[in-house]
Image 1 (spheres, rainbow, N blue to C red):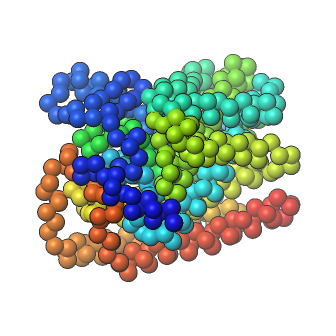
Image 2: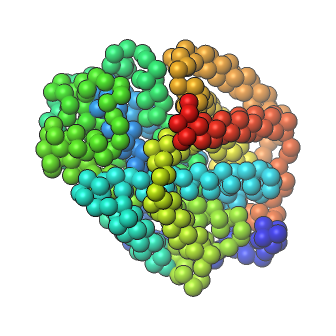
Image 3: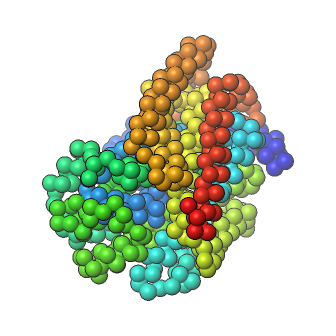
Length: 553
């Protein structure tokens, strides 16, 4: 009902030729480092003015990327270094194209459409698929926020601060930096916290790394000790933590909330690339630090089961290198968890606003957007209480969340790929054929990694290297078939005059005025297949988690 009401009202709030569901999403771009006028032109600018414009635009891409280096990311990179030394550094180079390609698509969707990711899914795929996508996101995000509080509690534990003090304080901090009623104030506070990510550099230097093994393993792929199930699983974890559904929802809505329009897309792309580079540098520093902390030549412990949890690792760093290193790692973990919790919670609140047609903007005060901020505060409170419940298997929750994210990621990426080929939504900004090929390849790789992660969680004794080879072969065959179908469909499309329009000024018309998408059997089969896989995998994971919590296998 709320969706239909918002749809009917949509035509009346369209300004110019662009849809604006919340008046707060229209106006000057206000960032942490200045303001750009709503009608200011992006062309014919000196390098100085371009850099000043980039300083204003920068934010959504950097925040979403650094938010990816959250509690789970820090733990995964630390485990890779401790267990396998520098031999897995090459996997970090894979993060850049995966991150940039997926997040660049939501940048275009946000800037051109002017609406959030959840709203577009509801409008272009219907209520059933919209409810699937958003309900999945709500469940996954709640559990992810819980893992961020687990990271905060583990980091605080190193300093002797009990969880019942650290977790509520972190919750109050999250609410305090968000409920300001000014987008630029929120962004400035987020940047202050983001600077904590720089602690990974002194962490690495204090572990006295040598350049040779680092350069070698960045360039030459390999796994210390040879290809094994544990090694392949860690590769899956490193790559699989790079793109999660919440990132897609967050950056698109944050681009809309920051009022970024198509003329500023190149600057937001640069923001996204910078964020991806920062993530890789941070991940590299953590992996190198833990590799050299336990071995002078960067080979780590050589024990695939050496890593247990972030708290034990901090104590191991203290024992091997010194108290300062253990303290820096713990502070880094807390900082990463706070950034991740803020971004994940905000992506949920944005999606809540999209789903129920309520105001969802950081430009609005609490009084103007009570439902939006109440959703944020409620999620933080519930996740904090969940983590503090005695007897909750926090280790199992963390493992299950990682696997669950792997389950939901392919369907999120499939929705994204379809939306970026919707000419009614993106007009001249739709994906080019070469970009579709690259995005499809990445989607196939992510699907393979997802299946491996889920299957190995359910069946821990399975031969992971053999499973990887089989799934990779199936993926390549499927990719060839998909390309052939796509090329045939493109040839059948009549010329679209929108493709020749000015890209800088083209905006998606009001949602109420768009043509309904043509029903495609291929699209339906793809969505149903991915959804069917997700349902089976989620049920299996739930059973596995319940059995494990009761001591079963």
